[in-house]
Figure 1 (cartoon, one colour):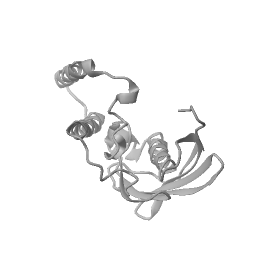
Figure 2 (tube, rainbow, N blue to C red):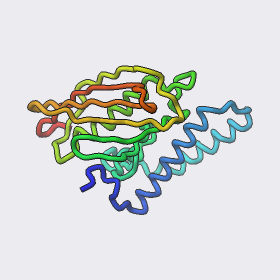
Figure 3 (cartoon, one colour):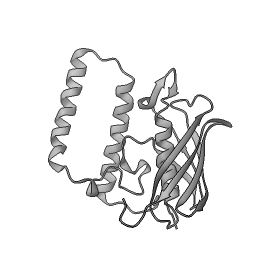
Length: 197
């Protein structure tokens, strides 16, 4: 059984929305690395406003939106998230890879410090809730920045389920550039009570 739903058959609508999210990520990376003349910036802005207008009539409540909810697509079609591609996973461990694009640049070729906890929270939360465990939410996430995490480099990610005590779940993780740990993290997730979301 694939607990990460990477082998799930996607509908045409889900597949196309995934491609749309990928295109948005490319746009975010591109905008983050350019300096445009006024006429090009104006044209680009007008095009984006036109696209927003095209999609606005299809606004729906959070419970049925596509973004962040399509299992089987890396990043769940949520353009904010750094996409972790899962290489190996079960209910206790995940090994994958991530490349932070230019959109996540903090400066001098390094990933912004806020993007790293975002990636850890997403993937650790998914492992916390894997294997049929009831839904839990992050209680704390502690991230240690050990070395520069470079943009535009394929980085290895390892996440481990450390155990449970009552409603508490302990998860640890690390990002590697080759054999160098660039950041590591420990998190506590708390199982939700009935009726909590």
